[in-house]
Image (cartoon, rainbow, N blue to C red; front, top):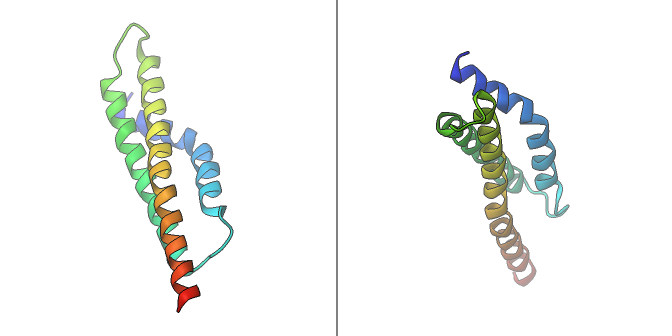
Length: 109
């Protein structure tokens, strides 16, 4: 089977989990909901998805061991999920700082 097809299939099968986690990331905190925030959230999600695909392909190529072909899929999926969560974990406090800064700037001005 083609490696491109297998990594793509792994990403598609894990897409519902990415959608749920990404939806939770976008939904909280509930305010403020400006257009800039929506664009920033979508940018973070796009970056997380792209990094996940890169990690999945790298994991699929690097996955070797006694587990055979299935081990490659497991390593690729675990790496993709880990990278997706890592990008969101880094973006979360940065977004909180950005939102706090925007709120304080409006309250003072």
